[in-house]
Image (cartoon, rainbow, N blue to C red; front, side, top):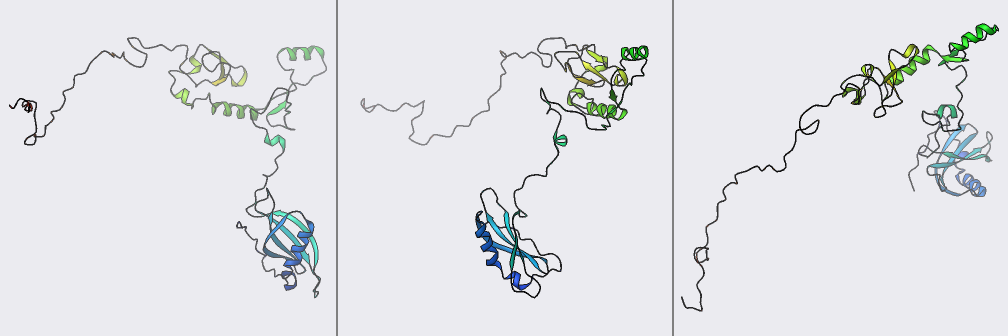
Length: 278
């Protein structure tokens, strides 16, 4: 049997003997329920002076670590035990589903797909009311012309949060790409500054070979800067030419030959021809 943790009784609570002895009574109630095999008795916990809970190992597929709980009751000064409740409950080591999280808290950047609708939460701190119609057609028309026709605009808090997210992101000044770049985006010809309050710090890259279409920090940079120049000379921009026909002469160390044993033929003394008798 797998080890299953047994919960201790509440502090200062004592199980009455009549309830503690009713193990088989509790088991019989579970068998009668006929919901699955009942394992070993795991313990008993006092609920109050008149009730106690017996726990049994639940041998059900997919419910490893779960326990059957049988609540028994007995009136004061009575030896008659009754069944109050049967339940299948997770034990300390049971595999249970994570706590439920509302859908609007589960949505993450990148989850939005074509056709999905994602409305901002009520009283979103990132938004503040925009221009409201005055009722004067001439004033309303002018306001709409200069871009004040939106119902909501980003609040100062929303802009600060946005700027921090972009600054700390992939196209921020502290990224690995920016640290290795020869210059910054604010000096690049492909840099298209944003309008509005974020203009001083952010723009859009217009280089299709770099961060094309992405908002980049003015202090970001990459190797595709408009002022990038390649080093002159032979070979690649990073290494000199390699001559694979060059030969390096290396003097081999001398090898000491072991002396030949007596009677062993050598190259200077060819073996005698036994047929010639020499």
